[in-house]
Length: 174
Image (cartoon, rainbow, N blue to C red; front, side, top):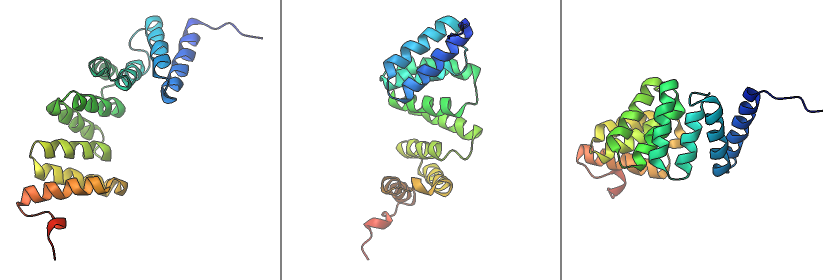
């Protein structure tokens, strides 16, 4: 026996089904469902714009993703996922200054975001701001030792070498 569903219940069901589809890698199904919910409920429904941004990001449609993340921030200005993904989109678009600004904003919201620290460190390093890069790497490694991967340690050592004008520790033969 099926009970009648209101439009709001149908929208919520579609929203949840679309979120699940996105998590399972069915991006086009998720996108279709989220757009349906947007038509029914409007752009401010729950985290709809965030999930639409994620769909567009997955489809490499970075400008569309950025547009959705901006809309999502209007409703949820301190949402860490939105800020993190937005920083990533700016990075994909080659907009390093905006990417760094977004990760810095995320660090204002959550100073313990080790992933944001790693991305900020990389952006500082690209800009030749090696002291800032070293600080971010150090903080990230303290917060999450699993981030001390070979690649991140190599990047830390390169920043150290450039900042101190000394050879990196691994290049010194003893």
